[in-house]
Image (cartoon, rainbow, N blue to C red; front, side, top):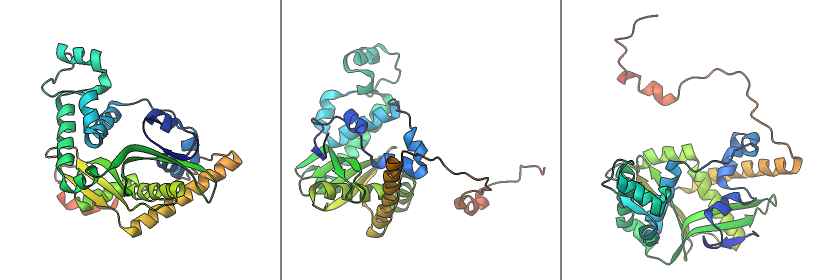
Length: 277
């Protein structure tokens, strides 16, 4: 497909991922090492990925979720005849039972009842919107897929997490490079449309009860760092495309230590039962 903006009806999720362009997740592999991107094997959908897809549908497209998924919250044994009958009709990826069903339903309820999140849901918007654009610096074709984008240019990205408190979610931002995503998506949108996004926000929701949810934005300093990171990765990708060479990690022998947080928690570790070597 040519650069442009495509709805989910025009470009399916599978076709989006198969498109011959680079995405943020691809750039994450480039950052690890170009060979990791070049030799990345196509992954089959795991159950966790199927649950993630169900959650996105439940929160972002509740009407479609109600018509396309079956929740069997009282069924805890997949050997039960009720579960098998439902799978025969709906397909295993669209039947949620027991804890899976409880978690998705609980997260959906939390997000849909969040007053700050409703400010996005209640505006005219599009979901699963794919954007394909040309990087003006390298000429490389890039892509991103918005979870939700309002007609006023406010983007919302759903993230499942363990803790929505600011300090805890900041660690998730650092670990999963969400600041890179915010910068990359914002710039890809501008390259495709000539317009800046009004906002890029995350809707974080806790996986466990009581499924607290929170709208979180990243400050401009972190966005600029994310922009610098994706630019370095995108330039390296362009260089590899041009040369046809995809080098691996140049890993010299090294000595490592534990993460710093381990040393701050040593007072909580009981060593009295250990014998000296």
